[in-house]
Image (tube, rainbow, N blue to C red; front, top):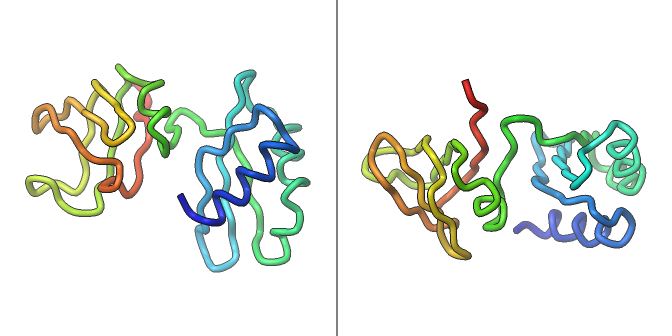
Length: 139
């Protein structure tokens, strides 16, 4: 987890209880994007609240705060566990059996790795090897 993510999570933990930070990414030199979630769903008002709580980041970035949508990012072991049985796409840091990306059903998750039933077979990948991952919306 990046230092920036840790800072934002710590701030929101006290100022906006229940808001979960799913992903923090600097998408260009001057844009910071956050995906958030909440047990009761994410509303425009909640996005505005979070944006206001992070106002000092606007000195460095244009700030984008949004809900995860159907292609929700998976960034923590508990995300993978929560969505077992769902389809996901994993983009890997290094090729695994010639593949930099795997798509399939999440069939296992521990604190160290995730197991996916992909076209290539049942594959277990350590989280450290995952560059980015997200749910794949159903057809």
